[in-house]
Amino acid sequence: MPPTTLPAWQALLAHQREVAPLHLRDLFARDPQRFDRFSLEAAGLFLDYSKNLITAQTLPLLCRLAQEAGVTRKRDAMLAGERINFTENRAVLHTALRNRSARPVPVDGQDVMPEVRRVLAQMREFAEGVRSGALRGHTGKPYTDVVNIGIGGSDLGPQMVCEALEPYGDRLRAHFVSNVDGAHLARTLKRLDPQTVLFIVASKTFTTQETLANARSARAWLQERLGAESAVGRHFAAVSTNLQATAAFGIPPERVFAFWDWVGGRYSLWSAIGLPIALYIGMDRFEALLAGAHAMDEHFATAPPERNLPVILGLLGVWYIDFWGAGSHAVLPYDQGLLRFAPYLQQLDMESNGKRIDSAGSEAAQHTGPVVWGEPGTNGQHAFFQHLHQGTRWTPADFIVPARSHYPLGEHHAMLLANCLAQTQALMLGKTREQVRAELAAQGLDGDALARLAPHKEFPGNRPSNTIVLPQLTPAALGSLIALYEHKVFVQGAIWDVNSFDQWGVELGKQLAGRILDDLRAGTVSPAHDASTAGLLHALTRAGSAPGST
Ligand code: G6Q
Image 1 (spheres, rainbow, N blue to C red):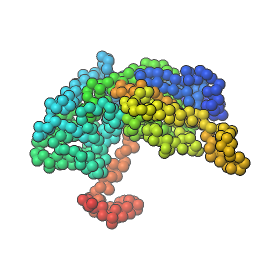
Image 2: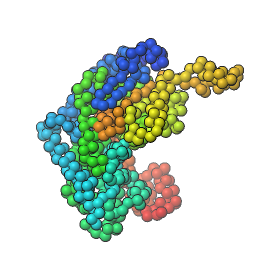
Image 3: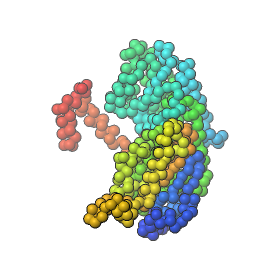
């Protein structure tokens, strides 16, 4: 059912017209309880959502929308293993991967948990063997470096987590190679000793062009330096659902880690795709990450909508996108460890909800997923925050901040926290023309000079943000944070009635690249190409793009 036809949608349209003239400054001044009313703690995370363009009426109306759109029913269907990914006829069960309870999770009547636990045990044994030095490379040296070769969902999650949990990375160095641009692999290999490197080829399908090209080149590099075909088995492991293809690549079965078609690529870091994480921080900490996510799953599954963190974040997103016209959403972690969090969320959100067709096959009558972008603070402040504060478009933003730092260095953390809170305050309060005039007058400006400068120094404020506080960026807190966003994305997809779990939008480019690669290999330009593609191929050839050219 298109959400725009629901009664709550119509009620929200009318409600938006009532809220539009209000200013957050006044809403805070009027209601001393606003922070208490609009903040919430669950699964180890604290959410302040008081700086949103909402009144006491807004959340109940948004929750009505969730109820009319069947969010709870759809959530229960996902958790029960129903095939909610209806264009691929698959269940969606990343929650089973981090199910720390004794509850079975059936798919078609078969409990998946014994298999999940079997692979976790295999990961533990392997990770402990590598980390302790019991497992060694071809020449008998212990491994020092792990290189994950994968792309998209087989790269972004583990890479983001390893970066975030760097303080726990105690034995091995972790590297991630994804891009088919040979520079990515070559620049990584330059720094490595083939005797002590362990490659993990991570590919759900084991057919992905980029990953196979990188894996083959890495294998050739290794063989050339170690001089033996048999070395491959000692220096490669694989994570895949395609066990035939991993065997054909030469990876011994005991070094192949399985997962299943009910794990979506961008939801797979909890599966054996998380192997580089387990190698980097150890299996106990990997399991703490799972436990943090499980705590958020339990909260999502049981808390009433108006006290449910992912539901609230999801609804607020829909509120801005569909009732206020916001086109993008900023993610601003005040934590250097979360350097890769925005790119990770970009995939999670944009690949899940960047859709225009609903479950009935009709074109959506409203907007769906936003453009997601961001950078860690305070760096962003010196780059794009100008736009956030004074641009003609406004962007709802999530600020994410840990109370404690892993690196308590002098006053650094207090400065980081102060900047984070100050930015949300500035976005909310703004600075009025009167305040600007008074400030300028106090600096000795008056007359024309003051009048000319004043509008430039004014801040409209009333720009919404959420603040998410973690005690510290620990494995458990990170697990909970990631699961929060996974479920937020789910809630939004459920309201928009799109399939958040397929990604047909990435297929066309792959198909066309195949044809263009044929031309590049043959040094020809197919007459079937459009004039621009043909022209570009000619230009590239003239500039020396023949295969093997430098
Ligand atoms: C994620 C997508 C996509 C996928 C990559 C890699 O949800 O499906 O990003 O993860 O295309 O696919 P493979 O793991 O099959 O190589």
